[in-house]
Image 1 (cartoon, rainbow, N blue to C red):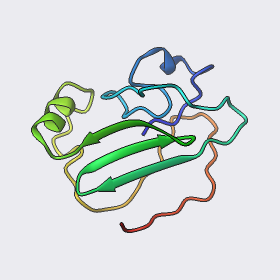
Image 2 (tube, helix red, strand yellow):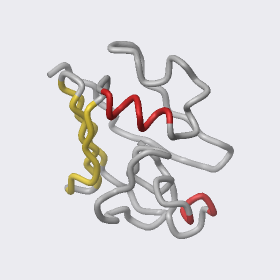
Image 3 (tube, rainbow, N blue to C red):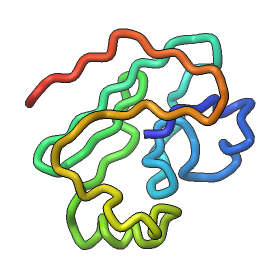
Image 4 (cartoon, helix red, strand yellow):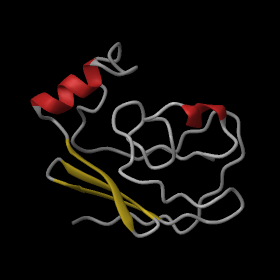
Length: 112
């Protein structure tokens, strides 16, 4: 899930690179991100391959991993050259940044 300031960051000009998107694959159904300086509330649900991105109380993206459609999305994205992208069924989370300040708080992981 993309974490980004949609107002100031140049990457936000690209649909599928905005806050809440499944980066480079699925754009949010609506923009619910709060402006920089305010906290956003995110909920990511993964249940047997079905994934939902919730941003500030609204479901903004949903998809199913490990399907033919998933494989097609990956193949048509910037991740096409990464043969193992999105194939793991368990593991660890990663919070990635490209040099801009970002803050997280109250991260909780629960088994469904």
